[in-house]
Amino acid sequence: MKTAIFPGSFDPITIGHFDIVERASPLFDKIIIAIGQNSQKKYMFTLDQRMEFIKKTFKDFPNVEVDSFEGLTIDYCRSKDVNFILRGLRNPADFEFEKAIAQTNRELTQDNKIETIFLLTSASKSFISSSIVREIISFKGNYEILVPDSVRV
Ligand code: ADP
Image (cartoon, rainbow, N blue to C red):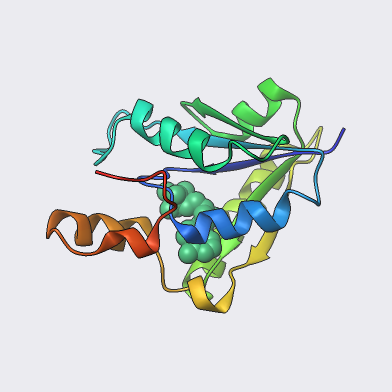
């Protein structure tokens, strides 16, 4: 079974994330959207809220699941026996950042290589980020057009 893990903070999920998962779901038997929890990091939404937003968003996608994890993504992949990490690329900055992480992850998984699969963002969504959405929410702006309907504050 070909399973991919889509790791991220998803604070909150945006229509950019949705686009990546929607386009990847026919390519894999299963996609696990995995919310990385870092105890040092401050989030706008609690883990439960972020999970709920994602669950509702993908309720009609039978091969999309939601989970959370702490620690290294590759350790989480191993615990789930998954060899593919899915990531989205928006711009050259994403590429440079993601390249270093993906290559490191390959080095760290000598025995059983974990491959990172990248999808380019759709042009109309490449400017969207969770941090911009949080900024708009904090100033009571019209964030709704940037997130799935399930995300409401
Ligand atoms: P992280 O904290 O790991 O960057 P994010 O939730 O910001 O977590 O992003 C998770 C993944 O989704 C990353 O691969 C990121 O590049 C991708 N992503 C974020 N926003 C978009 C977007 N607008 N279009 C496509 N991919 C995106």
